[in-house]
Image (tube, rainbow, N blue to C red):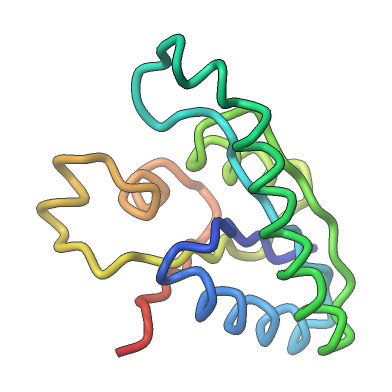
Length: 138
């Protein structure tokens, strides 16, 4: 089994990383770090021209997460997927037999998340794996 973390360097991501590392260490499991590189909304020509830069930024952020997991002695797997974030996390959770998906929130209201389609909101409704939604530090 594993712990899957959606990591994107958003305000809630740093705390979510710390929690995911703690959970993985407690269960002696690997941490699967996932970055969904597809645009969350409609894809236009401008996005396509910046796609590789988005993938590189995702890889760089995941490298920082790997460093933190290494410090805790937690083995990692890194995936930069050509999918929207929620679907990337669900697919990774299936492939890696995840115990839980950990994701940070931005502190959005539930109504805003429902209207705008936040990743945590989508996961809570689509995932068959338990989802741990970590709020940002206050």
